[in-house]
Image: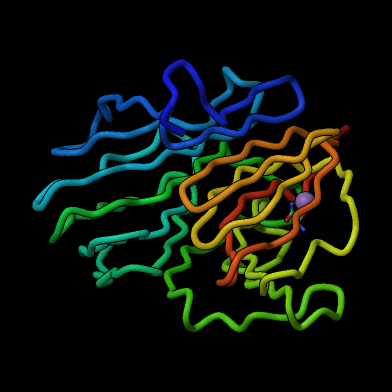
Length: 245
Ligand code: UGY
Ligand code: MN
């Protein structure tokens, strides 16, 4: 969009579409040689945080606050993630889940871009804390979503009651859709990774493409159709497995 004073970004109580032209860079306290764009925070009405961290070569992550769990997805660059005494080499497509109060540090080799989701952990009286998870997108099978082989879902974390959050990657062939308009209690934070399409959010239909971020509040009606000549994919967060009362 090259007319000044215009943007595709749109915010209302039910959702936010935040496009790259409106991003503003902030310092990332506790990290070294790193900055962030905070996309979704409690100030918008969310119960979690989503940001993009840019870490220079030799830069390092800091720890989360107490009882806050962190999920990292490497969008570009590479580095080493130390989790306790284990070291993991991360590259584009790698991801890691660090349960609350897990001692960890990512050190960037190249300049790295990380997609980060953080959520205060909600304990459950019947289940213990989850374990750390480290993996790569290419090693996670994509299951047809509600029987549609053109809309595939990769669940990056175990869907087990110890986990109070999920992070998935949805990949759609051009023309594939979410099979229904969804309305649900879980909220979402989403980053378009590849391709483009049209997102229905509440009563609005927005063209979206790689780099766009969307927050969907609980009960925000949502639907997606992939369009264009290449598949569209997005990574997204949702809160799961905890009673509201
Ligand atoms: O997991 C989900 O609720 C997912 N189907 N929602 C979405 O892609 N907007
Ligand atoms: Mn949904």
